Amino acid sequence: MRLEFDIERLDDYGRSLAYVFLPDGSMVNERLLQEGLAFCLFTPPNVKYESRLLAAQRAAMRARRGLWQNWREAEGRYVGNRNSRRFHLANCPEAKRIAPRNRIAFSKRWDAFWAGYAPSRECQADFRNSSD
Image (cartoon, rainbow, N blue to C red; front, side, top):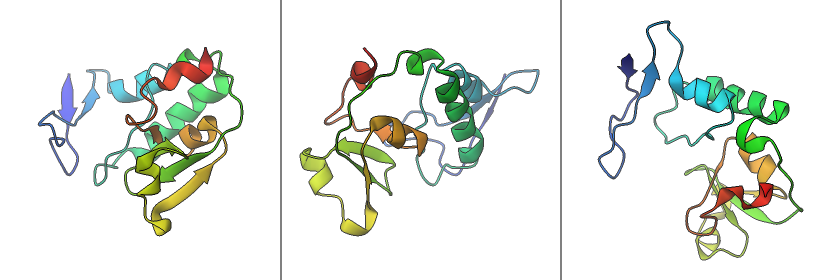
């Protein structure tokens, strides 16, 4: 196994941020996304494999694998932050703090995930609730 680091090696909590490669050259991060066992959360400036990993997530979404398997949701209102790549419920206090230039609107959580955004912990602790 080989770890490959991007610009920053640690997150704000001191955890390692790495891409994990197996001896056959495959990337574990990508495999998890391909199987729908995870979703993308890009942490700028660590975006070396952003397009590759987002493509893997989108493939799993299209194929309805893993957490995307039984996805159903009603339209709603969500606000994404272009800087953090997180999305919030429109009525979340954190969403109201996003500067207008950094705001992006989504009518479905699916669309936010498709765009490479991840749910906010503040207002969407259980991101799977829309697929139950």
